[in-house]
Length: 189
Image (tube, rainbow, N blue to C red; front, side, top):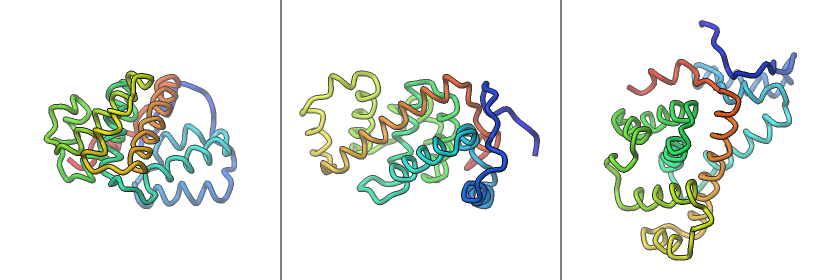
C-alpha cells in the first residue's frame, strides 16, 4: 500500500498504540480494507480518539428511527454544504455502498436537491441544511414539518445530533487538512 498523507499536522500516532486501539484498527483493516484517516488523525491522543469513536458509533451505528443510509445522507449533505473534502469523499462512498446506487452518492455530494429522494428524505435533509446554515432560525414549524413526514421527536433529536456532529467534524477535518483515504474513491462504483 502506498504511503499517503493523513493531515497537514505532524501529530504521530501514539507508539505503541494501546492494545484496544490496535485491535480496533485491525478490525477496520479486516472490514474496510483500511484504517480511515479520521481515526488515524486522532490516534495521537487516545482519549480524543476514544471520545470521537464513541460519539460516532452512537450516532451512526446505534439503534435509531433513522436508517444507516439516512444518517450517511445527512453526513454527506452537511459535508457538501461545508465543503469538507474528507467527509464528502468518505461519506459519499458510504451512500453509494448503502444505497447500491453510485449515482445517488455523486448527486448527494454535488447537489442533494438533484438526487432522487422521497418526501421523507427531502424533509430530513432540508432540516439538516437549515441546522447547518442557520441553526438559530430553526423553529417549531421546522420540527413539525419533520413530524408530518413520520419522524418522531427522538428521530428529530437524532437528525440534529448527526447534523451537529458532522458540522464539528467537518470543521476539524478542514482545519487540519485531513485527506481522504485513496481507497474511498473507488468504493461502490
